[in-house]
Image (cartoon, rainbow, N blue to C red; front, top):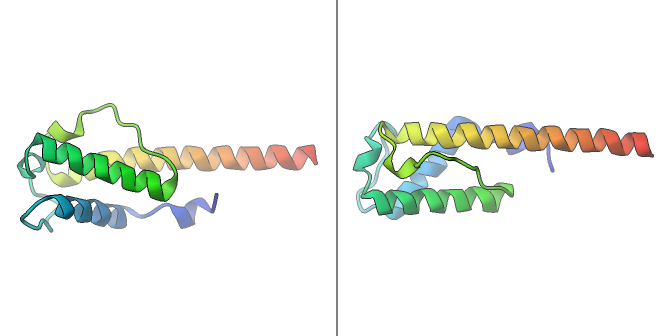
Length: 111
């Protein structure tokens, strides 16, 4: 695994990726992250967007954020959904980074 700083996207990049994913699924392009999330297609469309985005993250970072909240019915702006996913993603990435550092230190002590 590479450095945490090199691998972790900033929030603006992450939001950009999510909006790109939204725009792959909806007819009318969305560029305003403050658009009401519940107005982005129907529930099934929002679920497809979230699933596709989680697959993107898993393909690019090797894990899928685990979120226990039903994001497809979350009230608030689209950006609220991005924030929820980004927070979980960042936390999981940080834990992975810490675990890697611990394993590296353990390896050094064994050799």
